[in-house]
Amino acid sequence: MALLSSEPGIAERSSRYGGVLNLFVPVERAWHFRDLIRAILTRELASRFRGSMFGWMWAVAAPLVLMTGYTIVFSGIITVAHVGAHTTFGTRALLIFSGITIFSLVSELLYRGPVLLHEHASFIKKSIFPTETLAWIAVLRGLVYALISMAVLLLFELALTWQIPWTTLLVPLVILPLLAFLLGVTWFLMALGAFTRDIAHLMTTIVPLMMWMTPIFYGFSDIPERIRPWMRLNIIGDYVDMFRDLVIVGSIPSLTLYGACCAFSVATFALGYVFFIRYKSIIVDVI
Amino acid sequence: MSSEIVIECTKVGKAFQLYVRREDRLWQVAFGFLRRFYREHWVLHDISFSVRKGECLGIIGRNGAGKTTLLQVLCGITKPTHGTVRVKGRVAPILALGAGFDPELSGAENVLIGGAILGLKRRQIDARLNLIREFADIGEYFNQPIKLYSSGMIARLAFAICAHVDADILVIDEAISVGDQAFQAKCEAFIQNFAKRGTLLIVSHALEYLEQVCDRVLWIEAGYVRECGVPSSVLENYSREMTLTPVHDGEAGKIRRMA
Image (cartoon, rainbow over the protein chains, first blue to last red):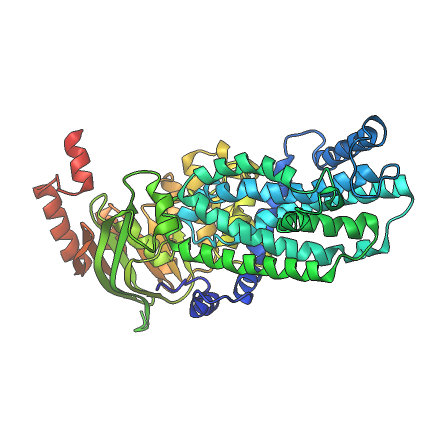
């Protein structure tokens, strides 16, 4: 095995653990490369709106317009949609928008994951680039937009209902395992996507379907009792549900559900990393 | 030159996976544990050599002989299929200058990212940004997107970065010939200065230059070490063979014959 010369300590340690599930190795490596992650993340965020007159205003405008639209449509025009039992003025729009906030974060990574390595092919082939950091960068970038979206959500919540439940403070506890889950999924998709472009096409095909399978425009309570436990298997839906409980309903989600989601997410994180590392050395040759 | 060995290659071999059909890659990922869906294409065979600290090793060989792959293996960009590579210290690869740049970003931004990739901390890069700007000497272009650069300017920037990362080992792949005379002189001065303390690996077709700079020359032929030793004798044998048999049965030879 080649020892990576530029980072001897880190390379040695991670190779010692080999394929063993060790949660600290990926975190430690990400920390080691924090300056690289920050450099690429800032330039990705900065360049997204470069060349446009309003720059970062666009990042805020998109969720703002969407939220306004939902408020108008779902509190006046359409009265068919029920999102759970909470159907007071405006809350329906808030519930839908909160679902969209979480799902956009997930879908962005599902779309980008398979093409992530292709986007950075020149870095990978020509320099000693720690490819696994690309997943961290993508997830953190998605998180930045999700946070903007959440800020807009809270603003509207305050305007429509005059209050924000205290449980909103617990949101990081739900977001954190979600990010771990997304990192695992991104690593998995990155590795697969490097070998075949079909994964990217598969994602564009199934993500819209997933959106309707996830309780975004409806709530868990709208699902027939018979199939509700099956819908719980969709972890994205569970995260949407927990996020809604905390931010809008103001209740604490079931700890069993939370524990199960955490366990599943951490497992995805670890397995995704191991999968990626297994193919990492071949990836530079095939991309 | 000290007796400490900083690069040690032992029986290094590298095979690329060649896939006949595009979908075979997917099958390899999914069912690779059952059988192999690719053909192995060997580009390096049993390469063994070592480089001592402060030594300057030249690498020569025909196009397609495996020089760049060998450098990639040494830098840790790609893993050897078998054998071991031991490298001590920080390597700065100047491989195909500037190919790792993002064309949309400015020179300064690429310096930040390039430096971070080579393992510099943000503070260190900030502190050296001006030095790099001066060394590259591309004026106002430093803050313009790379896509507006000429190839010479890209080479200048890339060399400037690698010159300022405190590398212990500098890997130069046919790099110096890109810039104009003034910049070439600057690079050569830097290299000569660097050679006093650091280890150098240079791939080049400029044989006179290699004879002047290198302590040893490694000749690679079709993935094997053909000769390794004193520059004058290796280079003489190499140039004699090049004039005797200009067309070789390697990949490059085949292409040349078709043309």
